[in-house]
Image 1 (tube, rainbow, N blue to C red):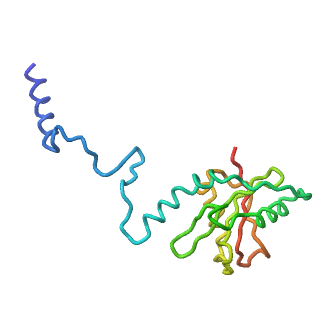
Image 2: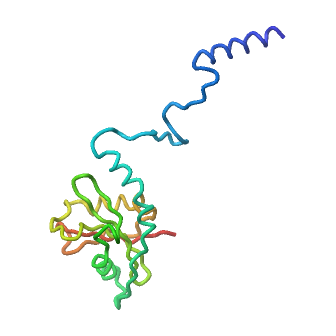
Image 3: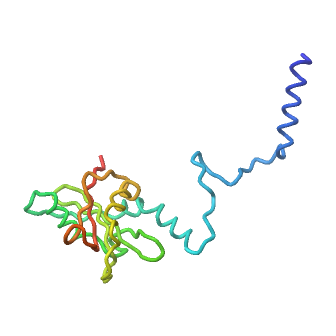
Length: 171
């Protein structure tokens, strides 16, 4: 019996030396995934992280614009989605960093759902080259759906544009 009690008492004493026995506070992390309780103190970073984290929730709260067209080609459907995509906080979710805000909305054309990323209303500047590929890679994180095709854009391929549309697979 002494052989069992002595190691047990030593282990309890050594573990109790790590912290107060009655304090039940964590070490600054919540949940299983280990996300920190607070954000960085850098200017605008908390707002940016909060906006990025809530994009799918805000996008889900907005009803998709529903359209019908005569064409059955996916590029024509994407073109209609590009024209109807939201450009204001009233009809789209804000995404982007502190230097530029873009708007993400959903448009359903002939039963095909598209995620549309656009510049704000009245913004005449174009998105950076390569933004279509970045948007395509970010679609699952931003929408909660998978991309089911390439990113379509206004105008000619290879040129800078102000809008991209990606067909979605949400099933």
